[in-house]
Length: 472
Image 1: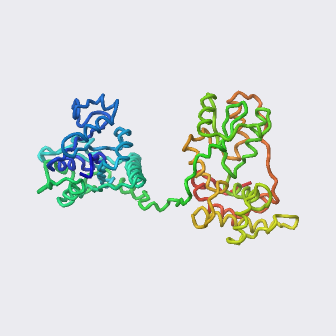
Image 2 (image 1 turned 30 degrees about the horizontal axis):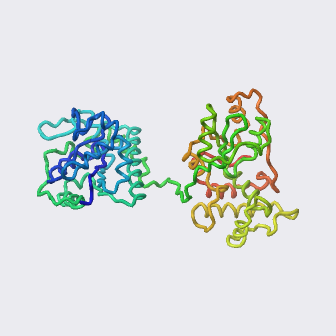
Image 3 (image 1 turned 60 degrees about the vertical axis):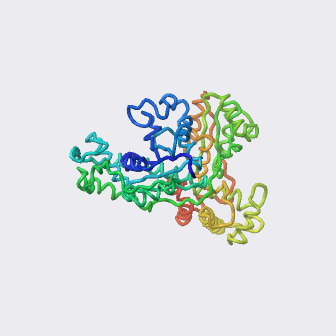
């Protein structure tokens, strides 16, 4: 047998009861209902399943899975997105667990669910006892329903991909196909086959949606606004970034933790943190490991963490001036050479001098922005450096360890950093220092063309953080 047990990933009103009935019609196969429903075990009003009570299952879900595997024949159960999450981790990692994924058109499942709610009839075995009812479509409720279903399917797909497994996929309509059901039996590795489908369960609402929804016109209007093909999605080809814990900076005495975004106002913030505690910037605590940072967090109850993001144009210009334009210490020498040689950026070979003009600076910065766009799209051989990676990707990486309490915008730190300090007990926080030492200020070279190039490179940041055009 290729599998020790099986799990049917489904949702309410997807036909999972019908699937279970026909699985149980296969000799040697048993589906035990919703074994890990948080409100009951297997089926409502059951005290136990395979000798395991609900209390025993709550204490140790793996115990019930063990009993499922031990039961005669091939056994399994149905699992919905809101069932015991501990089971998901166990089953998805186990290649000896057969995964059956049952899906249905989300609009159909939503309407069926609304009708069942309205009529109180969740199963139908006798058509003469069918209860009539109409669904009342709620756009916000449907959007939540759709997000929930899609999120769960993405979780399943990612787990299968990363563990090198596959699942047997069934659509609601496949359940009426005898050959498909026997194909499922073959995939499960059981010799039994069905000669006919068990049709004791009846389709409850065979009518088209237009006949089942009371406010069908409103439903059509709401669904017309859905981006079915994800046309508005901003593609993201950037590599995932880690939490960058060694770069975090903690106050010398004040329990503030700065999660620095490379290319942002790092020197300004660390200078202010040092002034807050009356120490030199170099004495602030940094170079954390995850272990030492957890220890710091434990030793500093009430600590606050924050990150500061910068307008994409201003950040790109700061990186250009600090890392790309110069040739000295701290500059990206090899990257700079590649940008000149391969990408033909008009950078001065030996760095800027008194002959460097505003027009040259403007031209070179615009070329750098165009390179960044290609680099973030995975079209160059150079690494995506943290200094010009999208801020959305960096912030997302922080969250892998712990998200920042507060995300501040650079043009707001004169208000919000002192506010954080006052929350930490500082009555008179120091002013925010300044930090400009570039050949030309952004205000000297900004043009609508530069703004457009920045927005093309950092579309994700503009959308995620709501940035508008740079205003100085």
